[in-house]
Image (cartoon, rainbow, N blue to C red; front, side, top):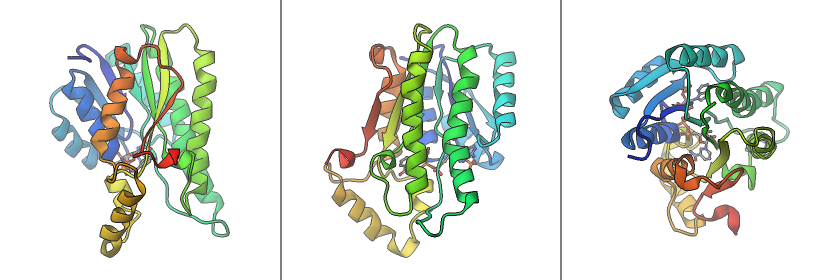
Length: 247
Ligand SMILES: NC(=O)c1ccc[n+]([C@@H]2O[C@H](COP(=O)([O-])OP(=O)(O)OC[C@H]3O[C@@H](n4cnc5c(N)ncnc54)[C@H](OP(=O)(O)O)[C@@H]3O)[C@@H](O)[C@H]2O)c1
């Protein structure tokens, strides 16, 4: 299997895209560490992923939580091979209704959380490895209400372009996988239950492949970029969005 003897960290691995990534890496032989804020969600996810998984309660908006996580990984394993900063999300807010709290929370989870996850992981990746950050098609074409979130995801793309120069020669690659609309509890929360069918049908229509994304679509792209098959790919943003950002 591709990731035999590899140790992978997936933040936000208790739901949706992160859970699918954790399962994919585990199925390909990796030992997986998942994080999230809700311990019960983490327990349920760990059971779905199966043996070899460990779970840590971490709020990525809190740097102290992230530092505690890496201290635990350092003392237990001493290394990391694959890191997927995936924890993220937002609530919609349109111009005129945007609050300071909305900006602070969105940037803390989607930018600060990614930054301190990558910075904390790198000292544990002395043997090389792969970091795959989860961005969003909103970094290119943010829908109404997703301006701050889209800006946060665009910031992540720019950070990665800088970081690959700053860690040149380390043996660590960093890439971004940016999903389009993907069926997860996170996406479901945006849509009123009585309108869900129509909204998801319209999203499928916008896609050039005629369907909405599934978490496994993202997981397979992450697994590819994390693997040695992608050894000469660094700093790219790979959109897994049915082509919506390309038209
Ligand atoms: N689904 C889509 O259509 C879509 C499209 C583009 C990009 N994305 C991106 O894909 C990633 C995953 O989204 P998803 O749709 O799978 O969402 P989801 O189903 O809501 O799952 C989000 C995961 O992140 C964790 N999380 C959220 N905030 C956190 C925080 N502050 N600290 C630690 N963990 C946190 C959640 O656990 P807790 O709630 O327990 O903390 C959960 O495990 C996000 O970065 C999102 O922006 C999703």
